[in-house]
Image (cartoon, rainbow, N blue to C red; front, side):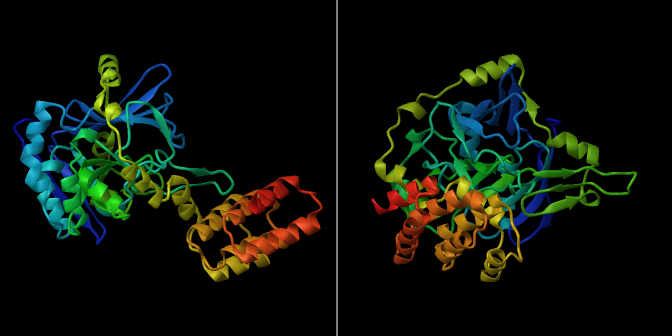
Length: 415
């Protein structure tokens, strides 16, 4: 960016849920960077030279391979960052009116991004890491996270829809102020602000740690303004006369809607690469405060109120579930894969659908989808009611232990 040019935020497209904007002359202070060693792939969201969160993978950062994640160094752990954040204080805490107003209010923050196209969306995010933990409960240990990548359904040959759903922290836990949390527990017209990591379902909080903690204690999702880059790029095909486009989680921009050439658009989407020394310094930069902090049981247990990524993926793959569709599956008019049926049954039980028990029992009694009977019995064994008890008792009487793997599940149910 030319240092003499000030950042410009240009609104391009809008909907009720999201807006797409272009950052011209972006400062590039808030950006993703990556690096490689012989056996390690690394990516991090940076604010100036401070890593806010750390992702680790194989050297290729496989798109369907779950990442290891560890804490960053802390958003305000440098005097330079503190100065920038203090200047943004009023902007970050402005009341929410609508997305266009938020885009205008957040211009000082959005101008810190690299030049390029972005989406700002209004989302309800879960204040967990997507893997069973309170979002702020992270340390310097590299731990695998199942919300960090998409899921590939090998039977149906489709990929899960990537979208923001879970949160990671960017600030030291010692910044926690329970008085601020209590204040936000009574506020409804505020928004946290986060950056979406488009290879999975995770967002890093830029601002709003107390808002997210308040939402966790209230057993609610946290309303969040999410900044994201494109998730899909469709290259133009001149031979076929097909235009290119870039897709975001809510909206898309066709090639003729871009303010820049497609080649320049592609160059702006790429991340900055860390050289060997920068990568080593980043990997060694650790903040012990993330390891030392002792979280209260009350906050740790809040994660139990939200479903994790594996369940969220079941909603993603299962699609719309109606009684008509379920009856069509039972009658054989709608044939689905084993994995699809597992997702459907999973959603039925999670949502306590009226057909959950009878549908699952009918699958078994009709002799359908025998490869997932163990999964069906496991789901039924978690649901204690007369209908399940009668079915399991009938199974024990008639099966004569011909399927011991199922008998084991039923025996455990009656223990």
